Image 1 (cartoon, rainbow, N blue to C red):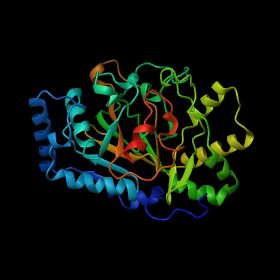
Image 2: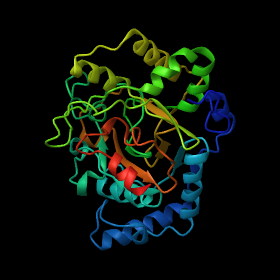
Image 3: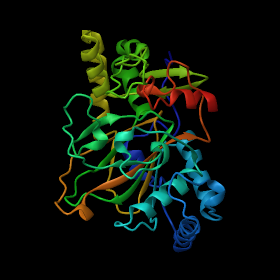
Length: 348
């Protein structure tokens, strides 16, 4: 266990992010035109998103900015917002090429769950984040297929990238991010007795996405919330899958486990720690899942399909990846059909 506070830019709070907004990067007109040209290049060859590589999507002046963003994601604040991408809110194919083209400059995309692949992209490598009319509280429901509020959590990859095609028409769907490193420091100060529980970790619900023939309903082992490995602290947190995992196992959370989860969630929801961002069409949000938790507010879509909120998601194995303990890699999707832990370990 790490018993000293995390220092450096990854342990930020809201005031620090507002003081220094350099984590927000706005494309110049020339850079936007460069993306346009790259999109036209792959479109002319009939290539969709998930069907081309970095060399097919050249970005001579934007690539250095993406390299800087990758450094900031791993050794800086762990969150970057790229604004001004030339997205057409009515052209999802074009948006898929843009998201993929930028993503392959940052890492290796990983498979997601089939239920979010609404456009038939290869190997479920690009996901739609949109309201599919799913009841958030139904068994095996995934938050990314609903318009419900989501609590702070991480995804099962090094990085998560979200490209806004259309923001919510009602002003909802506001993104929130918070530093899990800053939360760790607060836990050290306020609840040091609960850290052992968080290091031991929890079983997580696989939500019906377990690997075929595995017989699993939950992760095969406990996934630590915090893992100190190779001189680096990493975080994995999702209250909903922990609670549903306990229900599927028929083993209620102990009072100390409940207290540890509640303490961490309260800090993650503290407005002094988190920041909000209202997405605009053409925004590309990048988050390091090991140092930042993300969440969102609820929204209500209008009846017109072309006005409904839509984000495209990539899960990325970062080109600047960190050391991860074997029982931590892949997080709460370990054991699922889309288990990224094998890909993470194989590429590290």
